[in-house]
Length: 271
Image 1: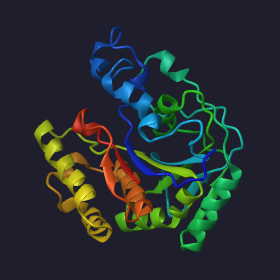
Image 2 (image 1 turned 120 degrees about the vertical axis):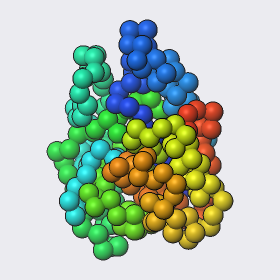
Image 3 (image 1 turned 180 degrees about the vertical axis):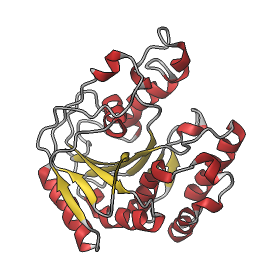
Image 4 (image 1 turned 90 degrees about the vertical axis):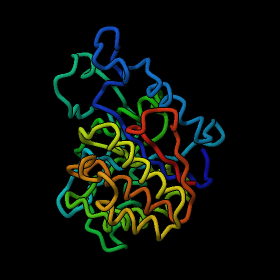
């Protein structure tokens, strides 16, 4: 396992379990099914991030948009994950049989707890919470063998950009310890027309790629001033993981990882 610095990554995790469905059986998801360009991209992402047997993360800390907590950051604390939380409805029976059973990392869970508490955040270990689809859908695509320990973490239901950026800053030292930090959400999460979505995503991408650390943090703190912001995020739960990732990124440069896909699936890496 690697001890080299790992990137901070934001992923747009897609719609429920569609990446594991077959568009031949369900034509309505043909563009985002298991044979789509998006699913293929997710499967090769570890390679794109430079991972191999000699350079793998020691563990993954994933901040999920689908776990909101009130005033206290929750951190998963199971030594072995067996059951999943299928937090979606109306999908085919087989999508509730998806399995993803990585080890947890209790030492990492404790480190996350201490880093947050030392930065003034209320935080608690949670040994009951199972992985929601914001965790297991992208990670099963990326790591089908479930051979890297995973810890998941909640967002705060205030959605405060300042707080979530500060959370990311508190967690940033983990990257030097070989921990891959992933924010799993969506760059757009509403039914805005395509042109409005594209304009918003372009504004976010330009902010992340061209501005300094402080400048991009300032823009993301005031993200509602970006064009068509509320049309793309009526609630910003799916944007909060990006705030965490930007905080963890520090001065690192941003790369858009999937420019060949729909802009609504935009993903970014900071390294």
